[in-house]
Each structure stands twice: as C-alpha cells, then as structure tokens.
Length: 101
Image (cartoon, rainbow, N blue to C red):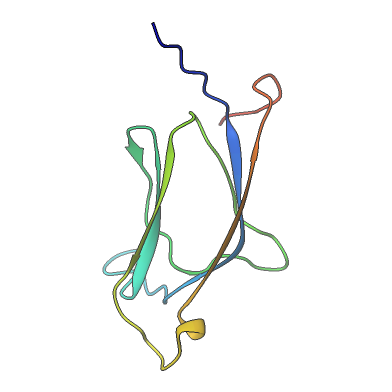
C-alpha cells in the first residue's frame, strides 16, 4: 500500500512577462500564455506583465500536483527580453495554516 502525502505550497511569480495582453474576449494572448494545472483543473491563460506597484502574483495549490504550462508562439519585438521573462519562487506550507479559497 502506498500513501501519498500532499503538502499545499505557494508559488510566487517574482517576475513574469509573456508577450502582450490584448483582450478578455478574443485572442487575448496572441504571443503566448501561461496556464496552471492544479490536479485535474486547468486554469485560465495569463499573459502580458503580471505585477504592478511592487505586488507579485501568488498562487496557493489545492493539492500537491501542480503543473505550470508555458506556451510561446511568436515574438512581437526584436529581442527576447522584451517578450519573455519568468522567475518563480515556491515554498511548502503547513497544512494547518494554509488557507485554500
């Protein structure tokens, strides 16, 4: 018998820039996007620049199986650093203190 222990964890996007954000309606991320799969659920598409006023996006897992999926389709400028920058920090959380939703 195998027992799996799932620890919730926190992902903090220290830096995130992926293409351009165009619209919530149609083809909002024409250059590429990031998605987070938390267990069987697949989240929305994230693109553009993901921080403002020093605040960094934070994601707290709902189980111990999370995938971060990056899709990059095209450059919109001449240099990679104008299109893509990604830095992620993670830490495991104590199950008794983690607040989910």
